[in-house]
Structure formats: structure tokens, C-alpha cells
Image 1: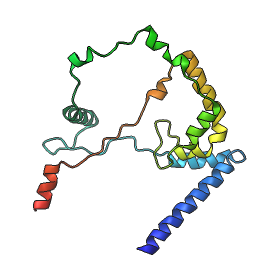
Image 2: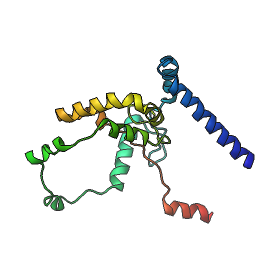
Image 3: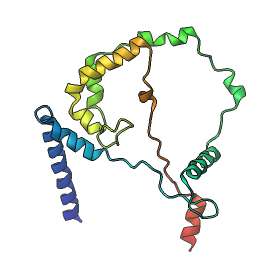
Length: 180
């Protein structure tokens, strides 16, 4: 057990050293850098096999409907009467973003605080790459954020996200399994 844990630990350290070397040499050897990044961003594009209520495999459209029905049954909708008391967006709210101030140092600090154990977002850029290349990425990201804020436009790509449903066992099913 100790040997296995030590081997895993050493393997992780070796991968981190390798990734740091690639990041250090990114300017001199961008081809190796992008080759490594592209090798890491292989994502699964489709939902696995799902069964309908009668146990038959379903098509892609049926998968979407099946997941939609499931999520609709799990989540509740807010009562519209309680929403009447909430403030509406008006011109005064739309201009609040003008007061937002941030510096290049703020962008650098946020990049350095990224959790490298998380998966990449819709842009398929791994947080480790962003963190390791923080100094090189600070200025372009800072300018991009400033431009977006001054124009008052949030790019559509920034509104995207990955939603991965995670199956959690029903406690009743767990009791049935343990009763066997």
C-alpha cells in the first residue's frame, strides 16, 4: 500500500515537473506546448447510453427529452408572486458596471489562484496552463476584459458553460441493495 502511494506521488511529481518544463519552453518551442495542450483537451462530446423507463436504449433526441424531464422533475420553479417584489432592471442598474475597476495585478493574482485540479471550461484551456502562463497572459486578458467592460458587451462565448449531470443514488435504492 505504501509503495503504491509513493509511486503515485512520484508519478504526479514527474508530470508536474514535465508540465513546468513545457510551460517554461513555450516561447521557444510553441509547437511542443500546443501539442501537449491539444493532447489534454480531448473531451467526450456525447452523452453515454441511456435507457428509457421501459429499459430500451434511446436516441439522441430522446436522450435530451429524457434528461429534460428528469431535471424538470427534480428542480422547483419559483412562485411568480414572490418575484413581483424583486426590483426590475432599469437604466440605473445598467450603468453600475462603469464603476468596476481592476488592474493587471488583479488579473495576475486571479490567474495564480486558479485550481489546477479542475477541468477545462468550454474554451478547453486547462487551468494549469492559465496558471503556469499567468505572466504572459495577464496583459492580453486585462485588455480583453477592459474592452468588454467599456463596451458594455459580454461575448457570447463567455456565457457558455459545461453542465454535467451527476447521478446520485436514490436512498431508497441503496436500502434495497443493502437488504439483499
